[in-house]
Length: 342
Image 1 (cartoon, rainbow, N blue to C red):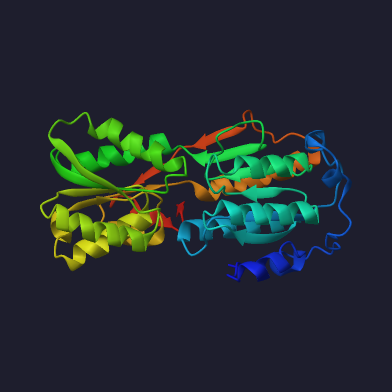
Image 2: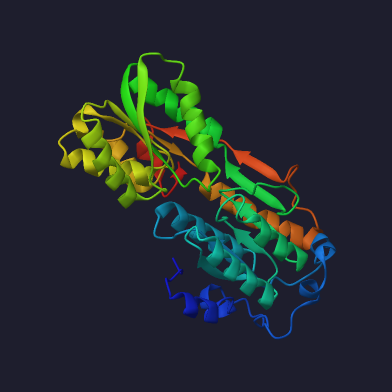
């Protein structure tokens, strides 16, 4: 993957230099001192198609490529953009709205064609995406959504409610519909976290012999997942299960359970479908994970961006689009690799 971590100052100094992360299609890089007409117009400019343009530079702004989920998102976005002829620059806000704002400001200054964005919070990202729209730069969201519509051109997410329901049903079955469990919750600013948690609760609350002991936030992170699980083990040493909002937190929980000698006795569910989780499912350490269609969602975001820039339409029926998830168990895990199910 081409993404490289840099200091904030260096990232801003290099932001949107087309040759930093993008493929070379022979076009001249965008001159940040000479903004395009679109960058000087009001919101209506973003409604007009570019026409028969030659693909230029786009900005890809993701969350945290140290997480395999977002690493895959970046790789697919870059590969799809390059195949369509675009140069690109890739940055990561690490769920920091201020960093996201800086990257979007840099994109506006450079007059990029469009922004592919995994937003840093549903509410927190509205102003930044609106600012880009006002500058004539359309945004296409993938993985997470905004709290408002008619600002981004596309918002493509996993069907988290459907995926959460699939996962919770598998978890309940593995628990024989009884016992105590704890929950690891994702980033509270990300709409995906409460949607998955609510889907879990909607299923598990139907079984009176299943009891949620405690819910803790671990922000989608493996290290925080382990830290929270260490505390939960101390508080509830006789728990029967752990249901997690994503794989990284679940993998942290597995590490803590292994260290405590409890792994063989505790059912663990993940959500994402990353390769480490697949290995845990194959090893019997995780009962299941829910595969998010991040590959197809990212491809669609870039394809709809290209279609919009060429025609003024994304080609989709609606701005918000949800793609169904797939349950990964020991029955099909051998066919899963790099978030792709063969």
